[in-house]
Image (cartoon, rainbow, N blue to C red; front, side, top):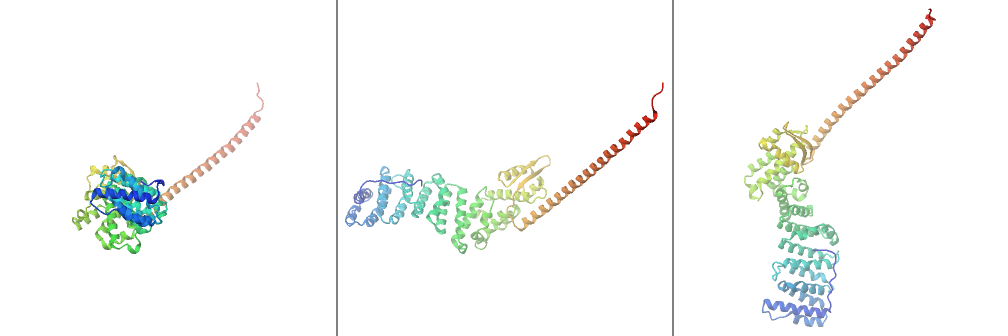
Length: 433
């Protein structure tokens, strides 16, 4: 896979190496067919006239036979071809064709063929300058080989470089979309649901507003929506509803859009009504109803938790909203916590779910009103607390003032009594025997 830039060193003049490669191509071709014409004969006069690009056209076109070359000779033969192409004044004219040939099956080694092709493609990618847009075509060829071989793990480490590569290649939106879709296809073949959805979403974001309603945008939008619905742990649909191409489904795919609205902001009752109205539609679209029911139940529980004014949900309320037996309540609460939609704890003694944190699925006018209501309640509560604190403070100050007056009174009163006692003692005079 792509890595640091490599240097490809092969000794010999262009004429010598071209003649050598032509001879080899003819040998491989003769093993597969009874062809009489030879590339070596065709390029001989072109070499004498120093027509390098014409020679390379013959070699690159004939290079398709290398896919049937012996495994041990495959990489060396392709490296020689790439080395010759690099000596052209316009190598970018030939490299896409080589990549196309490498994307085809390697018939001489069905088991190791993908690895051989990836080795050569990686070499081509790495010897090109970082800002050479031919790297884009080489990477697409790598994606085709990875997809055919089901080796997504080889691709995964390279995806972190994708954004910087796109900037270096100055790729336009249409080519970006093609690249993202190719990665999504590779991920889907490998069963990588998260990566599939991520790159479908990135592809959707490259669709201009004036193309949001065309057929290609409709198909891609529907595919991304199905991917989001089919992912067991995907619960946030705001990333889709904000896109123009998804909004365009209101007209082109109204049933799909209705289903999106349910999973974006509505609850289990709405999904059941949807199924009654569109009987059999979910199954016809290849969607898993049991998975969708589970998701909408978790989302319903998240919604009632977010809108609870008391921050406490009785088990009975959860049972009604999720349409489940009372003995299953705790299992569903644990699942919604694991899904990261709500935080809280169960009180088996009081048969309630105590909510610590919950997240709104959508945030619009209704939610702002609820937040305003909660803030008003909180403000009133704080004002009540402040009132109690203020009253207690005033009471404490009054108590201190009273105690201070009592102390002053005792001090003043005690001084008078002492003086009186001293006065009476003086009046009594000396004792008489």
